[in-house]
Image 1 (cartoon, helix red, strand yellow):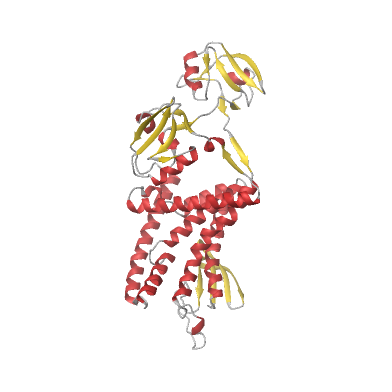
Image 2 (cartoon, one colour):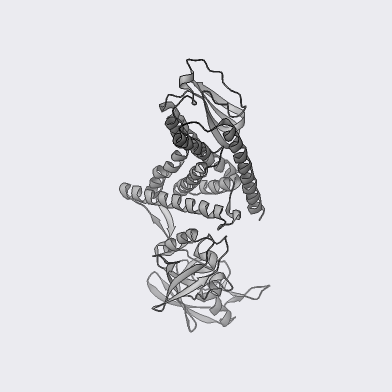
Length: 439
């Protein structure tokens, strides 16, 4: 319930920002605003100030700004205008003003990250350290796409489809732009450059790890299970395992295979603790059921809290905003071209889940998720689909070009098509949400 409430509140903030854009520009253009509504359906609360009624409605999946001469939004009624009021109606404004009013909502959503992301960078963001490191493979998951493509532990990716990548983060980002295509990797293997190709399906958008490539990870202990060999032998969190018996340990991924080879024998374990070398003895324990031998340890995931000064935070926030906009635009292009599966579309349930989970972490995570969803909301509303802001923008651009309004008949037909498209998109999004929820 906490997740749902937090998610709805965060979604409400984004809707408020969107509608605030329409509201502010309408006021600046001299248009009379009758209602500013968050949500649809039955009214829960309202307050009139000046000529505008501000209200909150029961269905928190959107909102609207009703301007003079327009329908009420939730009841479809028309407002009768006197001759004196017509000059303040939305329809009486020039094309440029109408275009600016409609465009203001999505633009506000796209500008919001420029305000909140710098705050998250100043507060401090927790990032895995491997993202800024070269894209060198620590482990290849057996029977994965990467294994089938010939990847080996130790390979370092230097380019994806001829696009040079300097680290794991850039490699992951490059996957979006190449969605639906075979991935051709330029790899450095022991100083020699070679090419590996991996055929991927439309759903491979989750980065290198989705292909079965995991980053290098030291064999450092992050957790100990009680009454298991490691804890009983005196191992501690933070210990770095260097060798077990005669087997040197270079990464966490070496441990499982070596432990299975050892079985239930008593073996020495060499480790480093606070700069000192230690040796302890232990015996792996066999698990009931599958017979696998275990030490009872969990890895220490290396991450770093990064804080930035004011100007550096502005720069990082702007960079991240542009990165998210670019990735979202490319994703939408790939979606409509069929290069990306429609299974990747999420609806309000997914949005509320993501937002709600972030709301239970820290301020930086909340602001990052707000920025991410805000950009998606802004770009979605810019799509040239009638009923959405982008559809209205398209009509006004056409009006500027042909110097006369698009005919009422043409607009009505386009809106019917747009409504059908939007309903199908909503049904698909809710279907995917439910499948993910039950899955």
